[in-house]
Image (cartoon, rainbow, N blue to C red; front, side):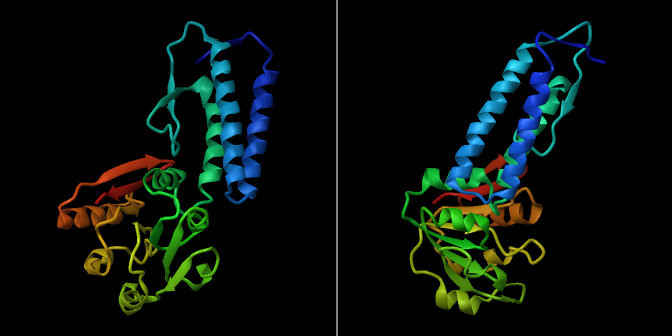
Length: 250
């Protein structure tokens, strides 16, 4: 058991928790946007500053430190003292409600921005919330098999129903763009499977960066490794917010 002595009133601690809960509610209700992104970053900094200050004002008396793993968060590989878990959990909740509104993670979005100049062309397999954000900076082509996702964002949709377990290849041969600067493999859904991307690799320009989302799942990881081995290229895996994406560079 830990005994904590606070140099200041516990009221500060509880007030911070209430603030963080309010921030989480706001993030859940709003769609991702640059303004919300800035709001999230600003408020998370406030919470991080509070965490640091709280740690300074808390001392442990005659106990052996106990640890608790915080799961499904950017800090999931780090053990956190129990005295900090409650504050950290609220901070993480704010981050996750922002990121979970995307079909791609914030880390993947930021990675694309870091390697691809604004105005470039992206071909994505599977569309979602991330399409709308990427379309603010890039020319988008989106292969989509689900009609309910068509015409939602500023992208050129290529409607390709599922035929024989993957996108209709006749549609792809006819409608894929001649030039693009990056491929994002984020579809079809896992229940359909993405493995046939390899079987139809000849339809695509593989001399551009290829990003495979959800490689924390075995089938997606196997697909990326299979493509990389066939092309004789290396892979790079990035983690964030409980997900992973992999990259094959030209």
